[in-house]
Image (cartoon, rainbow, N blue to C red; front, side, top):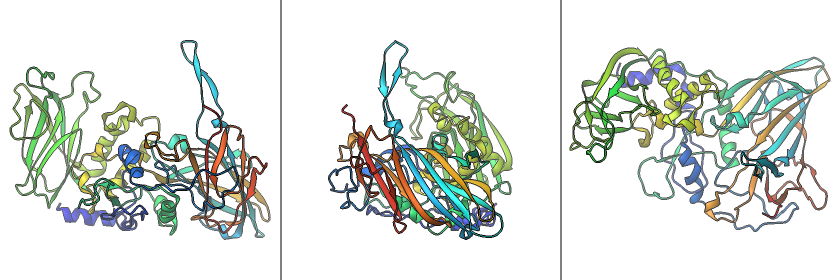
Length: 527
């Protein structure tokens, strides 16, 4: 199968994945946007998401305010690490016949220090900057007949943080049965602050302000895509080369063999062939000569990679003239010394892309990118993990027509979609009697937005929590209120709610015309 035929098949699978989200989220930082990712599942590596987003930003010059509303501060801060807003519930259809009153309770009890003993008889006081949120909706049926609604409760999270961020839904105090739906990570690529003149796409965009969530959700396409099934790639043939039982000497710097490696070299037509790989950590590409080299360090007993296979997945025309050999070190320089006594078994298999990717995904799920701290098994569902992996590959990875250069290696382990921020949806059904009401509540632990300690910004020690009032919701809100409780350990720095802790104002009615509310706090305790 030729490469262009492969993309035609992808288009037949679901045009939305290829087309619907080509427009990236618009950024306000002034960095250039390079290209548009096709689809919903762009990946965001932990390292990039952790640091680069904030360093190039200009912080707002507003000074810390009092406990009151700070009416002069119209917008919240741009934090380096953005946790996303609390989003409103919606209904798949029929929401126009339902009136809704929303009440949010912000519980700061996790900020209170709690003594935690250690194994040596000592201990220390510990606290958290997380917020306990109860987001309650009183839904009233305005019609003369019972209404069954399919409700969607959206929340911001990455796949990695999903267990900590997932809300619990109840109706009149009883737990609801839910289905979890996952939106893709928004696509698009931007320059780094350090390389503004570079001509290629370097960094994936990420959701770093409430406005980015507004851009993502405002037209309903993101939610619509999240409710669809994951793509099935079983109709796409693939050739698999499985590498097992790699043998070689132990690493010995003094003997001139610091990193014994297996190298696989082959020829291909880059216009007709796409190569994905798992387990390889070095590569060389020569498009003009039609050649490629992929290599991996030979794992030793006790290594997390020991007894794990490595894979080459070939889509399109098969590769040719493969040779394998051992070398004294990783890398693919032509003068790297060959290493005798190395061997590897290579199986040549024909299968479909769904089966091939699933086999690699099972290894990645067990220990993503070979790092034990990345292990996802038992933390989240494999079907969800695998589905989001496929969406990412199709949207902006090497299986998309707009994939960035940084992922041109085709290394699956490099595409760390698990840490990409996205919007998940809890789907459930409720029945509201004619003229009656029910109360649906979402309870969650909400992480804070913050600036990194080493940045030394004026927001050091300040934590932010955002709320949006009606974004992508079809419910008819007649009233929304917010309340704060257990605030002894915090001081309100900036806000637009109107809370006044010294004045005893802990409950406020929200303006229905206001899209966004923010609350920024710091510890009231002397450290």
